Image 1 (cartoon, rainbow, N blue to C red):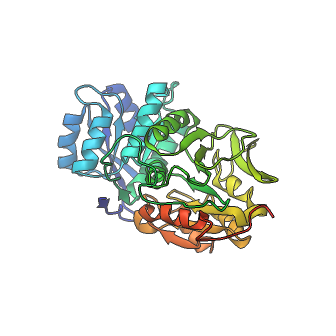
Image 2: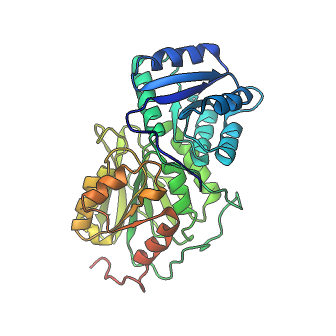
Length: 362
């Protein structure tokens, strides 16, 4: 992996706009001009012009349109991450094709993807985009290493689980989470303990993320749905939208529940909502918190640990944004901090009857 230094504290975030539409670039330029901590230093109408602008201007962050002539945004992103890694915020359409592209962009190393609103770039969108650009500018860029095999990973490639002890894995992530989740899951065996994930992302991206993981992972991957019993060898992604994914225990089973309600910590789904729902059976839980901005998950992981759960936090060096893991660590919620490449083995160690014997469902 390559790493890029953070934006200096107090400095303006210098942004390069890359979009083939002059109208879009103008709206972005005028909208971002209202934000005192952002400076638009240049524009480019395609990847080839952008390459020269990057050399000339050395921006902190670029915004990159997915669909462009001559070379599309995803191909350019892949080249950027291979040849000159830097923070990128992608702009995507709300179409199904756009959601597939957005998930691929996140897996390639884009810090964030923002959906272009169909009714224009209003102040609310521009404020959100500015916040994402500032986050990107202050992030520690981690570029995912390229997999030798782009198809499904072989079961038990890295981590092994000999005899499952009944524990379930609850995982939360935000900025940088798509690539981080892929990194952890591809090292888990096909007989992985059940994994339930709350990842902050637009609900419109979820099906594309599930499809991508299903094509690349040894285990089953599906969207969590109300009333579904957790099964070994399956990963469940919280759907978000207007709901929070929670877990309840029913005898010898753990059941997904989708609960409607307001956003928690500004998010649907909330990591805290997932973690807090499992406190009553925390001794059967492995809690994992990955890269992300803010502190969603810190309170829930604290209560899980206090109630007997084993907890893992992503270490600072491997995080795109060491926000959520930092908040959890400083709260005393993290039992062990690990880089991504060591998490699968530790999860399997915690979930293996031989390594960590427990009496399940007493």
